[in-house]
Structure formats: structure tokens, C-alpha cells
Image (cartoon, rainbow, N blue to C red; front, top):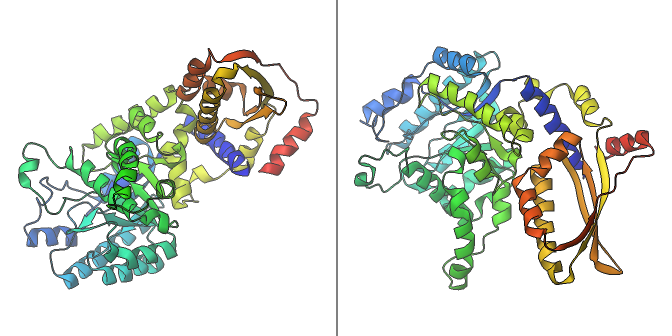
Length: 464
């Protein structure tokens, strides 16, 4: 309950910020350095990903951020991965990339953070460089390619690195790279970014799930790019097929819930309401983040895309309460960017959250006996989804009467009349309403007034 109250307060504050058009936080922005580009040219690898790397500069990034309304960006290196068979060469280049990234961030007046680039598949050197970047250079996260020259996330060789990252409690930002091995015929007329990157990301996630990597290293917070790739579509099939192959001895146990609990998702490449709705089927909205993928599309197109995304979020009744969190607040909390405006003004936030606008009531429902079990399944789903997805729904607590199990009382607490109305328009409530209409024998929603508002406010202060 305390967590729910905290999420409510955070969400209400972020809604206020969204209305004031507070700039976004971009967790998916790429950068390059001269040393990195020289390495690619040396190994004729500039087209390794079958697409040229766009030009990048600090000035152009700052202009894009100003034009788009982005207050803060997290920088990562793009594909291809800077390893071409020479471990010492890769280690040297990664050190130079991280040194340069640290300098860029320091020059940005608090507008940039960066992810460390590691000399994978050399795991020992990668552990060493991760520690240096995090302890000495001030990296905010670590970039993990889906595969580093054929070494995939989830493989046992990476265990020492995962243990180190878990010990540091880092944010690990994933990014797809060309799959290995790779059939170039598959990409003829179909650039990797159009399809194969989504398959590659999902492939790496599936392997991580198979070995329960996120579940076993819960202090690592993995950021999955590109609106989860194919995962929202593939996950139901994975879960359905897994018991069959496990029973046949072809797979081990998978803790799906624990694995998903360590994942966050950016919407780079698909910043739209549809992507958010799809992601909300597998994770709560507090784990959805904005990403631009700059500079892999024209700056004007990315800026207009962000503007359109803000509009879609604000006009969608189910997504509007989470808009400011998705655009900025979730990233600020995940990365610990306490210097941002988003994380301040706690006293104002508290006053707004614990005013007199709460709705508290007890709904009285009687269900036809033949539909009782079916009704309870509907009720369980709408209660769970409402609490998970709607900060304005503080409590939905159903109770069966001991002397008559067909009678159900539900303690309902909503943050405000407005958020209650938004709740009534959500897809999960509409599904419950339409699905149970014929099951309900009677429904009473008596109007209630709190007799002691001051004590009610104290209750919510105490829970906080």
C-alpha cells in the first residue's frame, strides 16, 4: 500500500509537469568518437551493419535536443561493435571511447549521461573496463550488445561480467547488432533496422530468459530498446510452448515473472501510443521510457515524432496519467538523475496528492450463483490491472461475505473524480463491465461522505 501511495504521488506530480511541457529524457541517443570511426575504417567495417553510420557532433546533438524539447540524453555507441579479433586493440579503443564520453558529459552542463562501452567478447577485460568507467569516469550505465562477435547475452561465458554489474547495481542498456552467423541474402532490400534488429533483440532476450539471467542478477536493470522488439508478441508463445519442451527435457525452468521484473523498455523507433499499449500487456507503465535513436533519422523527423508522441499520450484516456512518467519521470527514477527538475518540489507534490479530492466508497455486488467463479476471474483481472497501471486507483479490495459468497463488497479508493472517470474508460474496466453485465444480479454504489477529512489525510500521510 505504501508503494501504491508513493506511485500515486509521483504520478500526480509528473502529470502536473507534463501539463507544463517539461522537456523529455532521451535514454536512446547514439554518439561516435574519432577513434571509433578510425577503427571501423581500418577494418573496412563501416558498412558492417549494412547501413552507414550517420555523422554526429556535440553541437548537432545539442541543437536537436533544444529543437525537440529534450532536457537530458543518455549516450551509447552504435553498432558495429568495436572488436575485430585483436583483444588489446579493442580494449584500447573502448578506453578511449569511454574517456571521450566522460569529457563530453562534463562539457554538457548537466544535459548528458553516458553508457560505458566494453571490449567484449573479452570478458576479463570487460569487467576491468566496466569497473573503471563506473568508479573512476562516472558512467551512468553500461551498454551490452545483443551479441559481441557471436558471444550472445545469456551465454555462460558472460557470468563474471553479470556478477560484476549486479554487484554495482547498474543500468545495462541493450542494443541489437548484426546477428552472428549472418546470411546477407536475408538483408537484401530489407535493412537490418527494419526487421532483423527486432528479431536479434528478441533472440538475445529469449536466451537470457532461458538461463534466467535477469532473475539471477536482480540488481541489474536492463533497458530493452525499440519498444521491446518482438517480445510483446513472442512472450505469450514462449510461455505456452515452454512447459511442453521442458517436460520433454529440452529446456530448464524459467522464472518468467522474475525475469520480466528486471526489464525496462524504451520506445525508440516506435514512439507512439500503440507501442505503449502493447508494452503495457507485459510490464507496468512505470517501466516504459522515451528514446529517440538520434542521429539515425533526420533531426526534424525525430522532433516531430516526439511532439506527436506527447500528443498521443495526452489524448489517450488510459495513457494520459502516465505520460510524464514515460517521457521523463521513469528515466529520472531509473538512472537516479536527481539533478533534474522532475525529481524536485516534493512538498508541492505532497500537497497536491493528499488534498480533499479522494473518492472512498464500498460497492455492494450480488452475483448469480452459476456465474460466481467466472465473475471472480474477471474481478481479479480488473483489480490487478487497475492497481498496476493506474496511479489514480489507490485501492480495489474485494471481499466475499462469509454468510453468502455470492455477495461481494469492494472497498474502492480513487485519487480524484477525474482519475476515477479515466478509470471507467480504460480497456480493462470496459472488458470487465461488458463481460460481467449478465452475471451481476444487483449492484449498489451508495454515495458516501467522509466524517473526518483531517483524519483521512493523516491516514494517507502515514501510509506514505
